[in-house]
Amino acid sequence: MSVFRLTQITDTHLSPRFPAFTQNFDRVAAHLDATRPDLVINTGDLAFDGPDRPDDLAFARARHDTLPVEVRVLPGNHDIGDNPTLVGAPLLQQATEEARQRFIATCGADRWRFDAAGWSFIGLNSLILNTGLASEAEQRDWLAGELATVRGRPLALFLHKPLFRDTPDDPELAETSFRYVPLPARSDLIAMLNSVDLRLVACGHVHQRRDVMLAGVRHIWAPSAAFIIRSDEKQEPIGVKEVGLVEYAFTPDHVEVHHLRAAGQVDIDLATVDLSATQASA
Image 1 (spheres, rainbow, N blue to C red):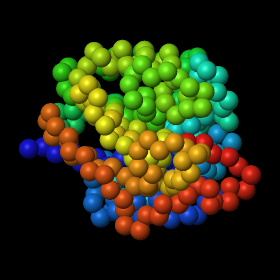
Image 2 (image 1 turned 180 degrees about the vertical axis):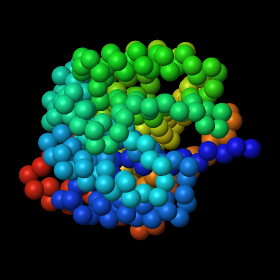
Image 3 (image 1 turned 90 degrees about the vertical axis):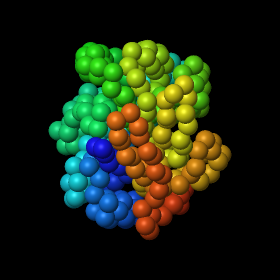
């Protein structure tokens, strides 16, 4: 039986300014060297501050280039900026086309589709949703075309932000709206996905590990490879606050999921890191 082995990493937050995050990435890299999956996907926030510090993005790309296996990436808010929301939550950096183009030039495509082991795999740029950028409409048209060719195969969707916390109808709250795919784009995306056999949604962004099944779809939140936000006052506990990665084994009509951490990975609390007057949100 054909098995497609995929490893998801996310929120690596690489920057030459934060060597502790790079050390955690190097421990993940050693694990990947030992296990040699067919593909690695980083679901976003490759860099610590891509929009304002292009050298962070270049550093992240260079570190990913050292990995011993094929890598696909998607942008996160720390790579190209964040989504505007209906509730108008303040953004440190709003996603821009300039930052998106810089990501593509440095890291590669911000959306993709491939098939393996009887499955279809789609990666989306979740940060341009609700922006009104021309690339948002282009991505929607592209996605509609790709979904039309899935032809009954189970679909695994990869993106940076979770679709929602608990249900598709979750309301947006000002204090947490930055954490999920925003409305009304979320509703539109879910309606599009209802046309196919969606089985898996894999994301990052929250820096917590979570694995839930809802209406036949398994929602995996991969933990950050870099750090956690230990304070429950600063970030509510929704899943497990730990660093790590996720391994998948896809076979026709089935997927096995393994949650783990690389040997030596350290649960770095962001509050203990000297950010030198920079800011981060997760």
